[in-house]
Length: 126
Image 1 (cartoon, rainbow, N blue to C red):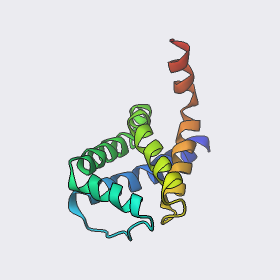
Image 2 (cartoon, helix red, strand yellow):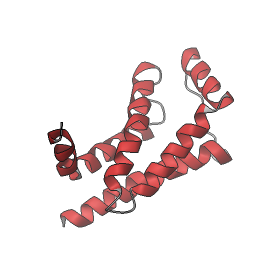
Image 3 (cartoon, rainbow, N blue to C red):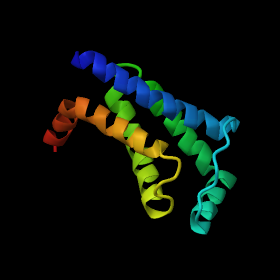
Image 4 (cartoon, rainbow, N blue to C red):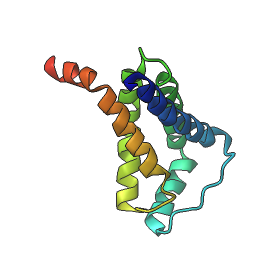
């Protein structure tokens, strides 16, 4: 049962990461702008520069790596800074937002829980 739950959670995390990553390139889904002027300025600068494409590529690569059991841990390591920045942005500027960030953060933490043995072995080597 644990294996099915792990696969389900990994796929649930991978899909929005890939979709939101592709959206940074293809602009197929319009999201409402955040309420604060600072948050709007930040996102405006992000999309006016190269940064949105880099984040989008990172989300796509990390999301694709989550589909395979062998590459799940690498996908998590790639998605960790992206997830951290999503959480930091919403805590600092737009806490409620559209709420999807809470869902993806919970899924990220759940996949990390399923990969706890890999995190433990990573920490034991140092």
